[in-house]
Length: 193
Image (cartoon, rainbow, N blue to C red; front, side):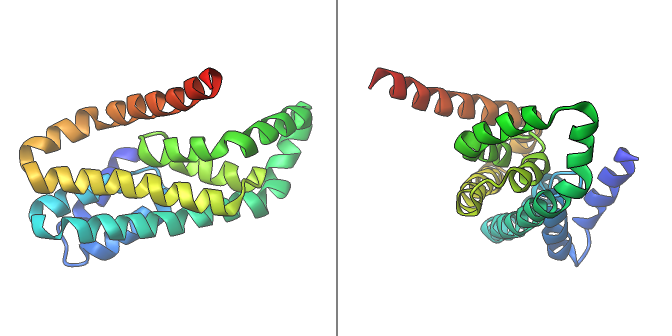
């Protein structure tokens, strides 16, 4: 089934409605859809390299709007769905501890998920369920998604087809390393000063 979704998503890039497809996939990927918008963004930028920034911007805006849907799902459906599951397993206290930690450091988690291949939708929903500050959520989502999509778009614009293989193979790992170094640097500064 996942392969069919991937193939269907890729086929959108070849249609005259590709931008609508890119916006739609970017929107739903942030809350429920398993295929990242990069599978549309990459062929679209390669097909029209001069429009790389328009596609990256569209991807970013639609993704952040979709993230707000994920946040709303977490906020409004958690009591109906998540709370009974936690109660069944006797984990209400554990969730409360995680919520306190997440509301202190969750912005970093959202930023990490917005940039890396980690399923962003998981943290958009979790952010709503824990009540992460909405302004923090939006700001880090805009920063992270902009960084990711504009970097991918620019690299494709600048280097063309040869960079596609690199992006598809290694960019997720490089983003994860970058985020670990960034967050580790902030923690190191906190303990040094």
